[in-house]
Image (cartoon, helix red, strand yellow):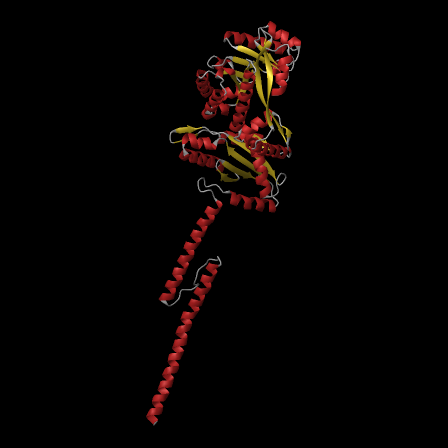
Length: 504
């Protein structure tokens, strides 16, 4: 029994010692594991730091802690990369719109004033089309590098749209310097790519006090900068009305062209031959009376149609209506021709010009029945291309006239190379011809010039008998203007032809 008690006592002691050792061992493991769990939970909430403050005596725990630390570093690096991608434009390395919105709100919220300069590469799509997307990308990278040399925050929004934000507002001279730097040709793959930019300037918070307002007004001012002659436009309240009207005209014009309605119409202004004093031609002019906007002047909506990509539809409508009206007057026995205006885009549109020929053929008319008028400034924009296209059309039998002669650029340099038979002296030189000596000098010079090049001359804007007599005496060929007749609708023209002393 004594031996049994001794054995029992030793067993109890051994168990107690084992339990104590187990508790010590469990504690040495559980504490680091608990620390590891806390560290992992911190990582999950986005907080990073060392897992164990002091190294563990257990090798496995140390290895596990090192693995957690390595995982933190990887997550931190990946998170930094993701944040960079979320805030930057991949191509240029500039900030993106997402970052700019937050930055702008933060700066205004801190009471800071900033100037925002929206820079648009004009014709960026054309750069891609002409030189390829690789060179287009290199152009944007070069512009980004140039802009990053200026103190401030730069961002790329989309395509060729770049934003520059600065706390120190740039004056006109500084803006012009920036423009000059950005417009230096970009050397890419042995090609020098020309660059042209337009700038829209918005001072905040004076002009815009939220990112939503900023981007809305930026679109308005950029639109004005691109479509006006000014390379740099600062925000003004009246630009919003202009922009809204432009949008309304675009929307209503689209609707008018799609729907079969009577809003669009053609009127014709008679021209008389000064030798016979009889009608020889009509100028076809489009008119638009809109149910929402009322009468919209052709100068206004034609320009907007060109900018909005609607000019082909407008010209198609004019062609159909004009040729249909001309065929009607031919049936009635009238032999006058009709002059129709074309834009630069129209001259370059081969499909549209082929359509013109088929419309004439369908009505049994020849190209000689039409005279096509192109403005001088349109011709100068790309004289070589214009000459090529005009020669091709002349070969088909069309006659061309230069409209608004004298209001464009250097006319003499290319006049001899153009297949043009007629020039029209702009009405600004004719309206006061009877009394203004300067206008008289200009008109006489143009008439002398025309005789050298063997061109016919049409004077538009004749509003009195004195001007008509002067033009006749000086050898002008054809005149048009309110003295002869205002532009008339088809029905009114028919009546006028039957009653006028200028009738055929």
